[in-house]
Length: 253
Image (cartoon, rainbow, N blue to C red; front, side, top):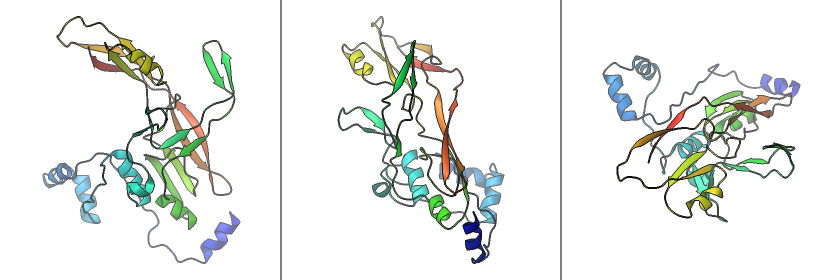
């Protein structure tokens, strides 16, 4: 901390004290322009008039994890290595997360139907290139990054970070899904995936009817990560378990 204070004294005074970036995922600029012209988005119009307003071309493929990775690093997908939500496992060809690699737990303790881990799994962020908050931290500029996608596990930088989209759940995936099928052999395929539950159903009628399936018991707890600064300037990640509220899925049978 003393070394940072000495370095800051020799630098020029910044022109602004605080710079805030607000990102809205999936916001259509055409709808935004129309609503601003109709006076239905007065706060957006006020911000555009007070500063600058221009459109930005999105990335290809135009998916949220790809676009947010380009936003944070200023590079294209070929540089930051994020092309989709998931990618295929080259050994099994099953889908896996494209942004984080989770190691296996070798030491566990069984307590009835529960398996308690005795060690931490290895976590590795698969996004490459440096995000801009890391570059700012290298120049002793503090950044607070709240709920920006593709930030798990948290970066080591001078600041604080709360992860968001693409944070794995306690099963190491993006959620548990239900697979309704009458195809023979599908249960064996689904059982090989730890985040799926196969429900074989006989064909009773050609008519399609909707049924509500409560998924509170099948959905695992979500795991978020909070990075807080340490005395030497680097963050320390602390996993926090957040229980999802009971909900229901609408499925067709």
